[in-house]
Length: 209
Image 1: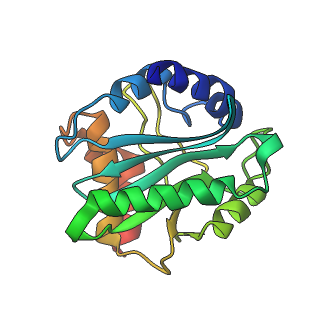
Image 2: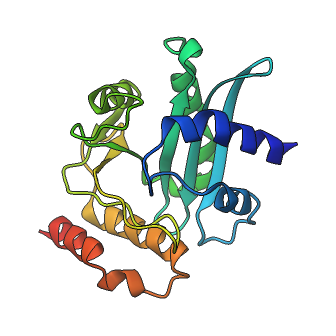
């Protein structure tokens, strides 16, 4: 079933490609969120899986944030035997088509992605190569010091990341701040508490300059 497939994707693809603490969502949270009904506020989790028979070729995990009308590509990875075969490009094309349909007449504000700063080493893939792969998929880095909000109440904010945007040369700061509020709000039940956190205040201050 879908749960078994998610467990396999998590074990064979996500856990091996994203080993840094606080970077990868907990499996139980993903199980919960993939089953949530869309309510117009909470991020809608989608997972695309490419397979060759029973073999997992790659996956893309992304969320649609309905308030800011933004898609975040949280994780994309391709298993080593299937790289350089257009798998990542096919996943991103499908992502884009689905998100355009989801946004409808509002027109999607942005497709964002996260990746490591070039100074970060995870023992899996060179961070510069990760950025080059994302650049080949149409993503470019947004010039501000991004810190990812906590993935859950049990996680810490995650630094050492860059936020990227697809097929745009720039993005209005209001869209980015709305996205940060959407992301953090979904973790903290929209209680506004994150707006007093240092990591958040630093980003907003930088974006508003």
